Length: 312
View: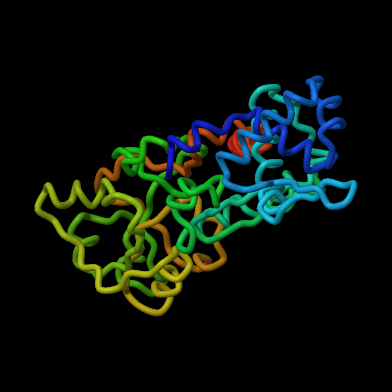
């Protein structure tokens, strides 16, 4: 990125190019911008020099935009629109908004929030598009690159999140962890598990390279305990299916276990050790709140989960 070259192009240049692409006239552009034609011509000359392109050329009695000028048009329009939103802080009107939002969720979050949250948002903003991805396919890099607006996922509050200062984490719904097993499991008849019970059987784990080692795993390691985890899968549902057909144990969210179809018929037991604090958290890029549309969606997600907690 040539920052020195970019620094020579200002909003004045971009606005002039934007209006010129619309009017194809120096005089008409000057009138719209409340400037003199010579001032517009001077700005265009500076932009031509910086971009090394003629931008507009005369064909008969008309000005014609060059290929580069036409190609820059949509990007320049978006830049001006974004800057206008930042400067004016326009009131967002969801009823007429026709943009799109991109979210990623853990499979467990789909079970708890996706359907009801989507219905709530679409009821207020009927013309929007919601793209909901699996957290396994689009992770935190999507937030950093701008291809993703929000992530919602189960999160261990007892340890710091991943070290990305540009990302903001907010707990939405507190939760607790439980141990799942099949109804025919030898431990299913016990009212309370001991630490030996928990460690004497193999476990199915969840793969997530984005997140740190769970707090309860570190707690067990500090006490010189270790779980046997012969199988790791990508999501909660797959882990629950493993439990249905084996004596594997699965440590997961209580909220998910109570709501998921895949967990139906499994036995839930409290964990026999300190697992710290867990919650479902919302993650976004710090600069996202400059966008009124994204700020509105953030408010809808937070408000929706507050109502969800109130009905518990």
